[in-house]
Image 1 (tube, rainbow, N blue to C red):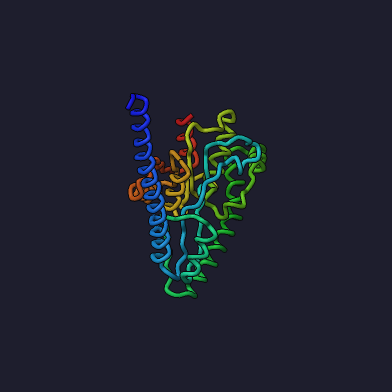
Image 2 (image 1 turned 90 degrees about the horizontal axis):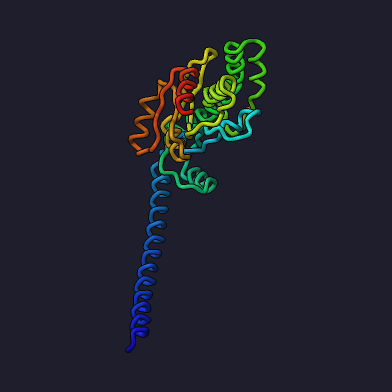
Amino acid sequence: MNVGESLKKFFTKLFDIITKDTKSIIITGILFLFLYTVFMIGTFYFTIPLNSIVSVPGKTHDLSEEIESISDNTNLHIVSVKSFYAENRSDIFRFMWRQKEIFESYHASIFGSQEEAREGYIERGTISIEADVEKEGVLKTYLVNEYGEEKGPSLYEDIVFSEDTVGNSDTLAIALMIKQLAENRNQSTLNKNVAITGNMDKQGNALPVGSVPIKAITAAKNDADYFIVPQEHYKEAVNAKEENNLSLEIIGVESVGEAYEFLQDLQ
C-alpha cells in the first residue's frame, strides 16, 4: 500500500468518525432542546396560580420613538412588561400560544376568587389609562417649570406618546430625554444601552412604579448595560439582578436631574 492510499484510508476513517460524532451531537442537542422546551412550558403552565394577574418580561423600545425631533436611536430605552389574567389553565395556554415564546420568569398577583381577580384586572387597566392621561399633565407642567412659559410648551409638543406603553412608568424616561435634548442637543445618543422605568411628579422627583423585578429581567434580556429605577426600587431591582444572574448595573435615582447627571457621565 503506497502513502497516497494510506492517507486516503486514514482520512476516510477520520471523516466517518467525525460524521458519526457530529450526528450524535446534533441528535443530542435536538433532544436536549426539546426536553428543555417541554420542561419550561410545563413549569410555566402548571406553576402559575389561577385567579391571578400574571406579568412576564416584555420588551424595550428606544426613546427616539417618543420624541419627534429624534431620528436616530438614543440608546435610552423604555421598559414594558406583558400581563394577562389567568382564570384557568386554558388562559395560560392561549397566552403562550399567542406569544410564541418561552418565559422563564413571571410575577403573579393572586386574588381570593375569580370575581376579585376579574375586578382587579379591570381596575388595573382603568388605573393605567388614568395614569396615562395624568402623565401628559405632569410632563407639560414639569417642562414649563423647568424651561419657562415660552420654551416649555414647545418641548412638550415634541413628545409623541407611544401606544405601546400605557400608564406612567415611562414618564421619568420621557422627561429625561427631553432634558437631554434641551441642555445637550448634540449628544442625544448614549455610548451604552440604558433602560429606565419610573414615574415622576411635576417637580421632577422620581416616583415608584410596578413590576420592577420583571422589568429588570426585560432590560437584561434586551442587552441593557444599565437599568435606572426610582431610588425606592433600588434594593428590589438589585435583588432581581442577583437572583436571576442579570448582567446589568442598577442605578437608583431620586429625580430627573440625578438621572441626567448619570447620563452625562456616560458621554
